[in-house]
Image (cartoon, rainbow, N blue to C red; front, side):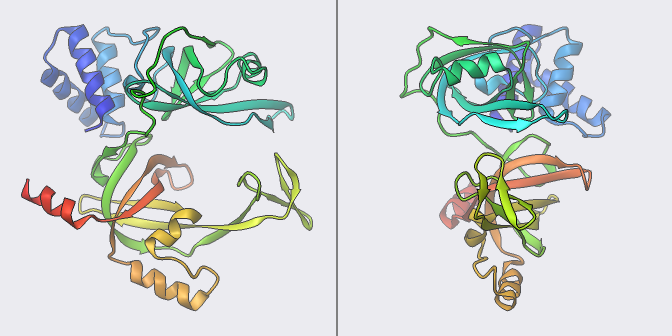
Length: 315
């Protein structure tokens, strides 16, 4: 089970003075009542609310953050800061957004800044990679922490030992039947079905989508560009407990054995060879609004380690 979920169970148990296993049973019952349409983490939040426990305005460790939480306070060190991006809102107004990765001694998380006052701290160099910051009154959207105009962002004096902060994203090993939207997952599964790969164009500078405008291709950040072609493929995974549609992007296609993307005849043969192949997939679960069902966005693929598998079977 997810480390975050276990941590929240412990917090609820301490606050309610109930046994952790009793809380776990309440969460299972709540999921069952809601036809298991929500995750264990979401059900835990409902149980906490019913018990009068509120995590709002409490300073939390990153591994305690769960999808749907509001008024979150967290402190950590910036380990990755991405460039400021500009975009046009639905009203046609130019706006800015910044993404960064914040880490503490329990985990790390992507933070999205929307407020111009927060972004100006980065543009002015006051907040940068390596800065320790405090984010208050933020909201969890999926697995991301978002700060808007009602949020607070400031430099913190709290010390973080670089040797103890967690720079790798923790993922949970789950069966497909236990997948829930917003989960970060690692799972071993067979490739049951493959669909025809689709191509798209990206900017060679930033790898963002390049949109065709007449005979030219335009990147929102770099203007007119000579695009590079990328591919993605949708497959169906089966681990014996269930099936799920999964999407793999260009950098992972060769890892599953697709190398002849421009050669139709060879590509058909390679797709046939994939059927029944067992591999380890890591990524995030999101809701596909078109199909109205969960979808697995794969960001890492690896071969099954037979030695580890044998040890698992022994235990």
